Image 1: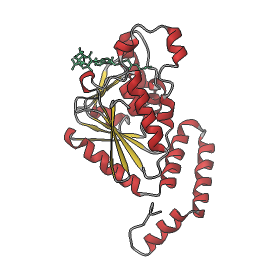
Image 2: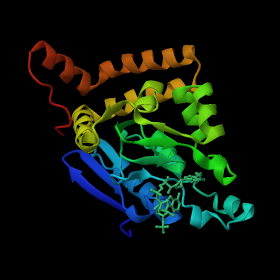
Image 3: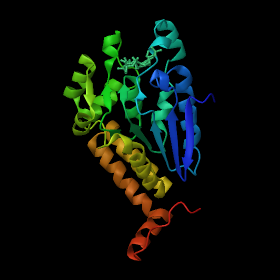
Amino acid sequence: MSGLVEVTREGRVALLRLNRPKQLNALNAALAAELVATVRALDADTSVGCMVVTGSDRAFAAGADIAEMADMSAEAMSEADYFGEWMDFANARTPKIAAVQGYALGGGCELMMMCDFAIAGQGAKFGQPEIKLGVVAGIGGTQRMTKLIGRARAMDMHLTGRMMEAAEALSAGLVARVVPDDEVLAEAMKAAAEIAGYARPVVRLAREAVMRAEEASLAEGLLYERRLFHQLFGTAAQREGMAAFLEKRPPRFNEA
Ligand code: HXC
């Protein structure tokens, strides 16, 4: 690992900080590979209950690295399946919270949307400016943004390439919370600790059930959720959670 992603641990929470600040955390192939490998490893570690992904105070990430991509051919892009490994980031079963300050543009905005939700600073700016570079989004921006904020708003962002401020992103549903810039990381770490305190298998199922809403019909999604709910009555987490409530004490999860 070459230090493009700094990992620190706080209890059951892993904090991943993108570390190319001079390039505004532009996502080159090396950073992408390191980030995806890091997330794969943390996802397999049962002592990790939640991840927080963050950047610098100036930029979460300003997009894919334009200098690296500029001279690539279509054949080379296709042969390398350029950024195809991001699927593993998105599909990691451990929840990921994006803690966003500054720019989240292009691939940076897409990275944020691959996280399960985002907490942004008041000064954060979001955009899919690929159209200005003569390309389109390539790591899910047209799909995930449309699911999150609807076709009209997603069209506006992808066709004009304009930036969206944090307040608009909150009202549109692109981010879950907006807080003062200097409170973003603390707020994200607090939310992550809360999630990591719940039963890990149940958190994973809850996440999967919500993600299912993007893939399945309503009837299929409702049945899936109800079956999960039934099955959880065979788990220690359900027994502990409900017993703790009835005994008026905090639940003790994850104490293997
Ligand atoms: C490579 C980048 C970069 C990027 C910034 N830098 N964004 N390098 N790729 N995406 C570099 C700049 O070249 C500069 O390096 C340094 O970071 C600081 O940036 P400045 O432009 O000097 O800063 P500022 O004037 O404050 O402007 C900030 C900015 C601007 C508005 C964010 O940098 C910008 O527009 N960046 C490009 C955003 C973008 O188009 N993103 C989409 C990329 S395409 P030097 O060496 O000059 O100091 C994409 C496709 C995804 O993401 C799909 C992939 C498959």
